[in-house]
Amino acid sequence: MNQAIIIADSTADIPQATVSEYGIHIVPMRLAFGDQSYLEGIDITAEEFYDKLSKSKELPTTSQTSPSQYVEVYRNLLAAYPGSPIISIHISSGMSGTYQSAVLAKEMLEEELGHPVDVTVIDSLCATYGFGLQVVHAARMAKQGASVEEIRAEVERLGKARRLYFLVDTLEYLQKGGRIGKAAAILGNLLNIKPILSVDQEGVIYAVDKVRGRKKAMARVIELFVNDFAGVKDINVAVCDCVNPEGSEEILALLRQHFTLHEVVRNSIGAVVGTHVGPGTVATFIWPAK
Image (cartoon, rainbow, N blue to C red; front, side):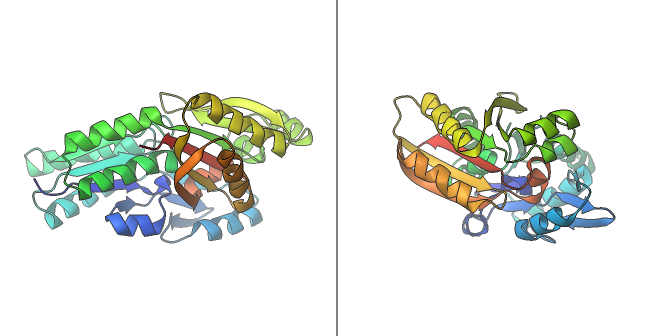
């Protein structure tokens, strides 16, 4: 069997150097400021997006990649790499219809060609590097010649082993996105409330806690991780932020007081996810080191 081809949508927030190293194929998602449309990571960088967001009066809109676009991606890759299976990993179906688009695309392509295609579509049940870590691990295994079944099993295992928390700096963007009411956002900001969010086993975002003040909120995030990994000292960690590198460094420093860090990944949260959580957010993802 030829080496598996790994695909992910752009919300995986994988550093570009890693994408290039492992030959990961990234399918961009789209966002728009008014009538100006952008492909995430292609037409607009994370830095450009947050600068534009800070000057915009209205929240940008985001849209998933269509089934027809995935049909084109799959068709082109199957032609370019004959005999190679495709593994397509996507942002949680509990947050976006991207996974469903990819599943439908496979069915459409099979109908078009008149035979089954070797495409495996996986729902990561997570977002940003919470599933980026699964994609990277899949790409490493593919490079070593692992089978689709072996890669899928490892992706699912990592999904169960990872833990993650988003520390949101302002309630403004959760309110604009309709996740909380305007009154709650105003009161929360006045009281300096910092929500801590996570993703449940169904891939849906939920509120873990609300803490008053940034320092206390960060301490609470560390406390949650220490409880999650009781008895475990060796971990891998990824910290992604929305124009808040100082917050990322602070989280890493606090984690080093409790754990031995092996693989450490740093990156920005991309435009699509950043639209909904806003500047200042720090997302931390941990999985056990082997």
